[in-house]
Image 1 (cartoon, rainbow, N blue to C red):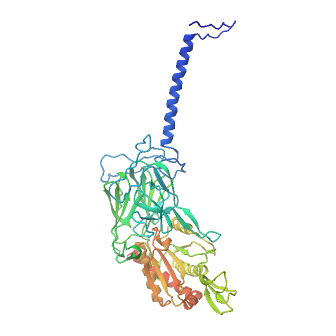
Image 2 (spheres, helix red, strand yellow; image 1 turned 180 degrees about the horizontal axis):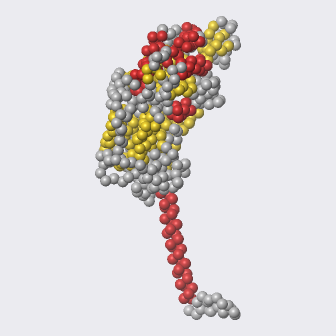
Image 3 (spheres, helix red, strand yellow; image 1 turned 90 degrees about the vertical axis):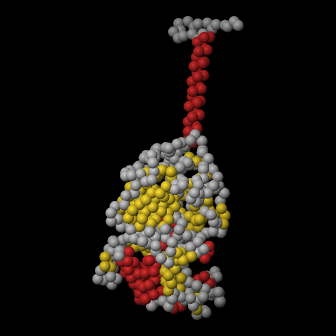
Length: 556
C-alpha cells in the first residue's frame, strides 16, 4: 500500500514521525493505559473491601462510620499467655488492619457452642447509645433479667436483616445470641411526650472472621478496678456471675429474681468470636475485689473468669470503649469507711452517693388535686380535661410527686452529708430529665450507690406503705438495710422489700441501686406525712441509717 509522506516544514528543529516510530509510540501508550486500568481496578476493589480507613480499620461497610467501630488501642500486655499456644498479638495501632483482609465480603460462619445463632450474611448492627440492654435471643418476650448484660456503644455484630416485632416493640437478633431493642421509648421531652430513639443502626458490610483479645492493663483507679483490653474489633460479650440463689428465675411473666442467698464466687466475661487471648490478668495481693483470674478456652471463644475475694462480694460494673478504641471494664470496689461516734455510727468521708430525684418539669408524676365545690381530694389520673369528674368544676393542686420527691431528696442529702458523704442529686429544681439522661448521668458519676426517690399511688385509696425495690444481685443488701430501718421507724403501717424489673435505672449494673416508694399519695394518711417536714426528716433518717449500715457491712 502506498503511503503519502507529509512534507517537512522549513527550519523545523523537531523530529519527524515516520510509520515505524508512530507504531512504537502507540504501542507504548497502550501499555501505559493497560497498567493504569489495572491499578485503578485494584484501588476500587480495595476501597470497596475496607472503606473508611481512618474510622473503620477492621469492619467493612457500605455506610460511612464516625469511627465507633473496629479501632483498637495500643497493646501493653505482659506476662504469660492464658491457655493459648503460639498466637497473633492483637493489633497495636489504630491504623493497623485486621489479620486478614479478604478482597470481598466473606460469608459469616456461625460458631458452634455457646449461644450463637445463624442470622444470614452481610448485615451489621451497631450500638449507638451509651449502653443498651440485652434479652434472651431464644425468646420474644420483653422480660428483663439480671442475668442478661448491657453492651456498650460501638459494639458491632452480624444480625438478622428483618426486624422482630413483638410486645409492641421492635428488636434486632444478633449472631452472638443477644436480642436488643431496635428503638426505645424515651421521655419526657419539653412537649411532655415521648420519642422513639434508636438504640442501634444497621447496614450492609462485613466483619473479621474472628476476634483477638489482649490484656493491656489491670489497675485500681479511684473507687474502681479498671481492666483495659485490646481487641481486633468491637464484638459482643457476655457478662455473668455464678449467682444461683434466686427465688423463681426464668419463670416467664412470674419470674422472680429475689435473692435467697448471695453465693456468687466469681464472674465470667465471655468474648464472642475470640480465638486469641494474649496476656494475663495479674491480681495483686490484697486486692479489694478479686483474688485470682483464669482464662478458659471454649469451643469457639474465650472466657475470663475473675474469682471474688468474698462470696457474694460484688458491687457493680460498667463497660465502654475508651478514646483509643480499647474495651474497658470498670468494676466497683467496696468503699472504705470507718465506724464513728456520731448519729449513724459511721464516717462516710470518701463515699459518693447519687440520689435520683424522680420526675420533674413537664413530668410531674402523680398528683393530688382538690375540688372546692365537692370538698374532696382527687387523684390527677382521675381528672378529665383538668376538671372534677363529679361536678366538672375547677380543681386546685394540693401536691405533685416531683416536688415531694425533691423535698425528701434534699432531706436525705443533708443527713448523709452530716457524716461526711459526697452526695449528688441529678436535679435540684423542677426540671425534666429524660430516662437516657438519667442513665448517662449515673454512668458518668459512677457512684458507690444510687438511691431513687419516688412516691406511689393506687386506684384503691386504702392502699398505703413503703417499698424498697432492687434489680441486680448486688443491690439486694442495700435494699434490705433501707427496708429494715424504715420498718423500725414506725412511719408506715406496711413495708416491703422486693425484686422489681420495671424501673430502668435499677437495671443498670453500675452500682447498687435501690428505688424507694415512700408512701401512697392516693392515701390520705400517707399524703399527710409526705407534706409534714418532721415526718419527711424521719423518713430521710431511716434511709440514711440503712445506707450507713450497708457501708459498714461491706467493710466487715
